[in-house]
Length: 77
Image 1: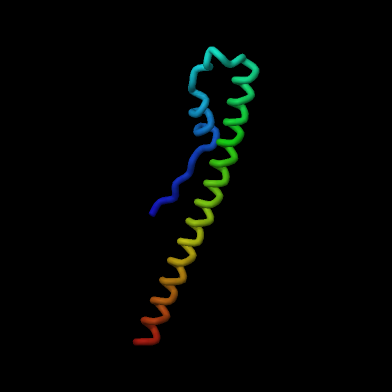
Image 2: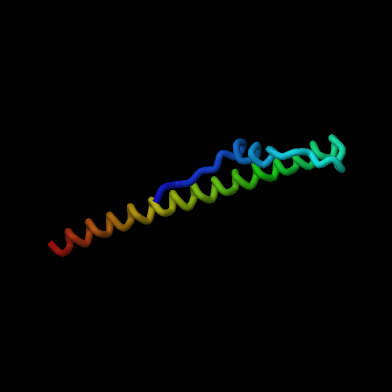
């Protein structure tokens, strides 16, 4: 299983690729998109941290299993 990583900046910038609605003034549009950008960066960063933790735990479990298999083979030899 390979680790998935989201680039927070690229993800957030992709969210901003939209047209400003005619009924919203520039300042409101900018503020809304800035908030969306910040939320996206934080969400991606959290995801990446969780993914890294999960990947590390998986590697640790695999190492423990290999050691257990080696010790089991030695004891049965």
